[in-house]
Length: 277
Image (cartoon, rainbow, N blue to C red; front, side, top):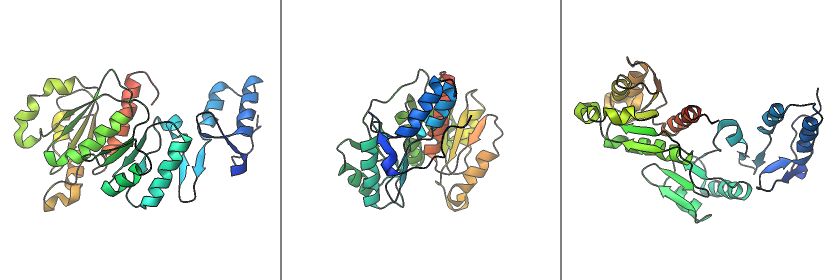
């Protein structure tokens, strides 16, 4: 049964719901009518609603249904955006949604630009992230454990930690336990085995995830960092080392991608706790 037109959006046809999110009134009514008459299942209607809303502000098209599809809202990647564009995006997101806002890879100038728009902005300098906290973070029964090989890996580790917290996960940290002093890691085996998901951040030769993966049964998400001397090739050596891990159950993210590791950990955590991500 086909009853819906193609998704053609015009500003004049778009209304706002009570939460301030863009909704197409005509198409929502058609969906509800179809469900009420039995022409469409509730699940099918929900699936179509997942793709409904975006906001075109000229230089950006902001996706207000990403949380329904992916389990977390759109995140602002700051590098490459002008401060004016960054402020415009923040204003639009604050007007049309009520959730927390996360801006990644933010420097002090990006934070100050965001802080000029809202007093709710908090700068996590080590993580290079800005959070506009408008609702309490959730928490999980289990927790994500973030492990860093060295102190120099903390910026990527903190990006993962702050992102995971904003996404509603309980997070614990275990820093500077790299293989150069393996006793530091081995004294924390019970701490590692108590976690639900482990994110391991390491530069240099990237050996730490293999060691952790051989000690635990939990999923291990490895993140190579660009920390290291010349032959580390900006993290490529660590990346290749992790991809060639002898330990089973180790997945590998891109270089310095603490954000991506946290998003993957969040999906695993939600499955573990019987929720949808």
